[in-house]
Amino acid sequence: MIIVTGGAGFIGANFVLDWLAQSEESVLTLDKLTYAGNLANLASLAGDTRHQFVQGDIQDRALLDVLLARHRPRAIVHFAAESHVDRSIHGPEAFLQTNILGTFHLLEAARAYHATLTGEARDAFRFLHVSTDEVYGSLDATAPAFTEHHPYEPNSPYSASKAASDHLVRAWHHTYGLPVLTTNCSNNYGPLQFPEKLIPLMIHNALAGLDLPVYGDGANVRDWLHVSDHCTAIRAVLAEGALGETYNIGGNAEMKNLDVVHTLCDLLDELRPRADQISYRTQIRFVTDRPGHDRRYAIDATHIARTLGWQPQHTFTSGLRQTVQWYLDHQAWVQEVTSGAYRQWTDMNYGGRVAGAMGTGAAGLPTPESGMATPGAPA
Ligand code: NAD
Ligand code: DAU
Image (cartoon, rainbow, N blue to C red; front, top):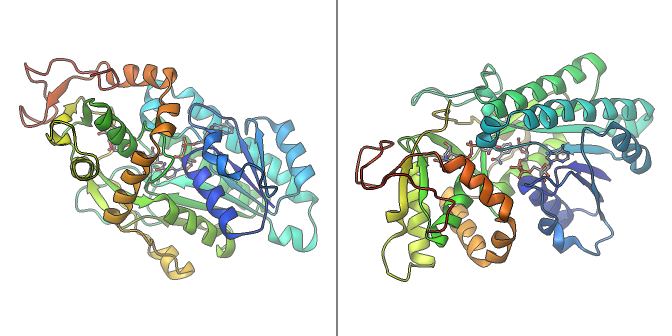
């Protein structure tokens, strides 16, 4: 069996569901169920004896030791993290606790467990650490995409904490011989993503008649990958990856944020037009930029393509259409996760940002008509 940390979150849940759809090998999901963890994401596994869920914190070393001794996994796939850059700006401590100390405790527990293994079980064991392209920092418009050899230059509390965790994983391999694998992936999108991240936030706000808050000039670039392609890549690395290696994973889909938001509006205009027949684009507002906002990420995924034969299957066009349709079909899921706590978050993150209506002023600058907008508040 395998242990998946953070398996009630966006990517972790997609991974667990994909895994059990393709394999008879059991999964134990360990998740603290923070605001981002949602057992409803795994509801389709109810009654499936191949899956067990344990609510717990990766910083709880005693719990980790019991789970490893009892279940004797052949791998740990480590997704658990605080994952949202904006939240890391408002409150970095939880990021240092979970992403750095949590990873440290998991590594130590894995090291102690690995030391008890012999023969084939010892040779087969893997610790796969799921990380991000944000550890490499920001690229200029024409700079080549990140390879695995790009220097680490994290710029946000989130990316600094993930960079620290990557270094710990590397050190536990070199110093203690723990059989680790690390993946650094670009921006994911798809079903089950919490609507604090760009794509589900824009879909949620558009349908709710709220402002669509674009940070700065909207020209920041992200490299988008459908979550199911990320899951396929992780399975490939787990199966065939070379010990101690890092694999960059990306979708060859660089997009400016404003282009992503325009595309989303156009898809919604087609699939769920507003009652007044006016385009959702009119809800776009430029708001004060994210502090330290990285300008561009781009992944060079040549290494994983050449060594493991992995390629993304979704284009951004097809993947985004499928994702918009998923959110339209799962409005009850969205309602459930956009609870009172969620509304507090949107008030805190967006309440102080000055909004400028699309087309009425220079990007990012306030316009006299628009005043202060609070995208999380009812229209
Ligand atoms: P998410 O925020 O949706 O889910 C994180 C999960 O971890 C939640 O279920 C949460 O309850 C759980 N968790 C948090 N703290 C925990 C703790 N202390 N102990 C146990 N569980 C805890 O995140 P996501 O977007 O699914 O990202 C998963 C992983 O992938 C993260 O490590 C993230 O850095 C990485 N990553 C994400 C993206 C992306 O675009 N979302 C891209 C590349 C890499
Ligand atoms: O690159 C991988 C990373 O992608 C992951 O490691 C992170 O866990 C994940 O959250 C994501 O980070 P980003 O900061 O790139 O994602 P986010 O969806 O928050 O923002 C995407 C872009 O959209 C970014 O340039 C900021 C912008 N944005 C975001 C929000 C929430 C807006 O313009 N308005 C918004 O309201």
